[in-house]
Image (cartoon, rainbow, N blue to C red; front, top):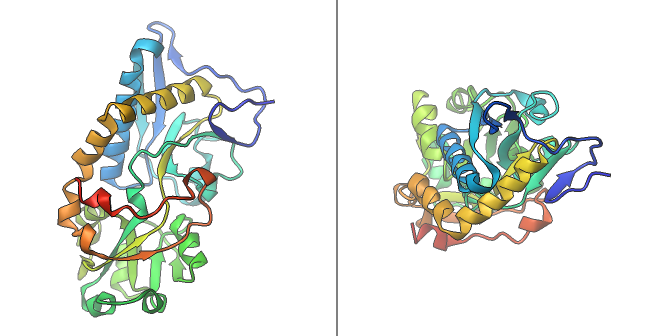
Length: 293
């Protein structure tokens, strides 16, 4: 019987709780998968992991991160532990791709649920469709979402039209061609995504009036072989949360976005996330998040 200290899926048997260490130095080597996300998220989540490992080094020893930013298409992401043999990754709580996988979940949000505040990218010529609109009118439009992304099922379950196809790389070309009306991304990443990807497609803008919300917190998923690493991450996350470091890192990456994107003055459309774990089921919009940055 597998005893889970945090939260787990399935009951893997005969799993080792030892991390990967360099036998010469007793340095913990952490294989961190950091693909399938925007550049700003990659940098932020890597820094959070680094600070956690450093905060626990006195108790658990030295560490070294081996990071992979390789993108995995489709359901290949769900095999990050069982086939790719990574140790840890960050994803949204309740990610349906991992439902059949053995893993450990640490139910402490890394970024204040900011990924759940969704800002649209649209064709500039369609701007009037999004001005002083309503949830009913937005449901008449179609949102484009890359294949297998978790957002697709959330929007469908809330009665929205969804075109789920293609990849993160080609979705902006398809928006430009009018295959659908809009795309949404987390408030923490939409500007980075626009600058690095969407701006290369002609006629696209970040819509400046509307924002969706649903519970979508980012958490650590840990390889079930790595019980000691999971214990270390949970303890370190509590340390940096309590001493203010986690909040300071958040502000350093995302504080300026509050003003740049006018988040506190946007029309908010609230959705339900039927896939969210019980631990986060009561997450509600917190506009104070955008007032105190």
